[in-house]
Length: 146
Image (cartoon, one colour):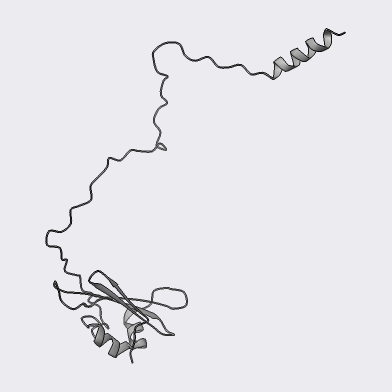
C-alpha cells in the first residue's frame, strides 16, 4: 500500500505534464504562409516637397455673391462693419477674425496679396453658434452687419 500511493501520485502528475515540442532539424527555414490582403504593406519612405523657392504664395480669393462688402477689406474696415472681433488670431502673415452673434459665427481669413502688404479678407466661413453646422455665408454676414 505504501508503494501504491506514491506510484499513483506519480502517474497522475505525469498526466499533467506537457510534451516539449522538438525544434526542426536541418538548415532550411520553415515554410512561409501565403501572403494575404490583411498583412501590412511596407511603404517606402518619401521626402516632403521642397519649400517654394519664392517663399510667398499668393492666396486664392473667394468670389461669392453677397460677400462683396467683406472680401478685400482690411481689419479696420471689417471692424467698422461688424464691431470688435471675438477672436483675433495671427498665424505667420495670415490673420483670422471671428465675429459672433445670436444668429451665427463668422470667421474671416485675411492674407496679404503680395509680400509685405496689409492682410485683407480673402475667405469667409460661417456656422450656427448653437451646433456648428454650416450656414449661408452671405446671410450670416448680413445678420452680423452693424
